[in-house]
Length: 254
Image 1: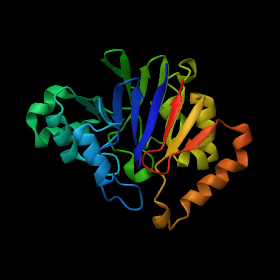
Image 2: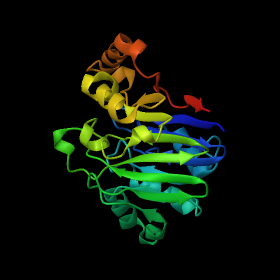
Image 3: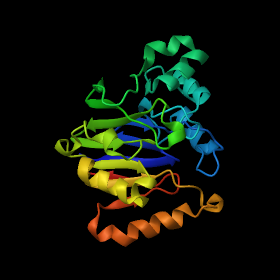
Image 4: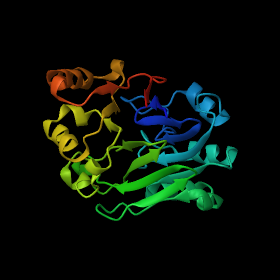
């Protein structure tokens, strides 16, 4: 069984489990400098179900920040695709329902209190585990935030959104027992020694897909160079990693 992961924008990815598709943080804002906003041609493909975005059944959002979520685009998609459902933090669901109350019947969430029992959403032979986690950064600790562990076709994929890479977010999930095939994480998980230690101690995936990098022409802080330098310094002793930098890039796990 093969699962394909396609980079959409910023932290957004399309998961394709042999035709069953999940879009995570894909419908984000268009201009979110210095990051990669959702290009208008890609937004149109998603809305019109043009391949590779031709069978999206679930929209997942980690939190309500504009570089991960756009409420109006989400409502537009759900109205055009009556078979689709949305899962998100309570703040994202509240924004969706505020724009269109009837969508409450196709919306699912969980309070983002760390160490709560995870809610699991089943869609055909896919399972989506909702994992409340604290957002990175002291200014964002109270943001309602979810990570997701998706199981399908014998594969397990963990998308952490902007979750803080600290033991408190991961130690209760027992991910070492889950044998995670792919960790999808923002680039600070590769630059911080403490974050790499958390990956080793609590997740230990077979592969990592790093994203949320800034656009090269707007990278005034030189985050890209720092990330690549940090990764290459220890890559021989770390988990194989790919870096999503341009919309449309994809990998397969089998």
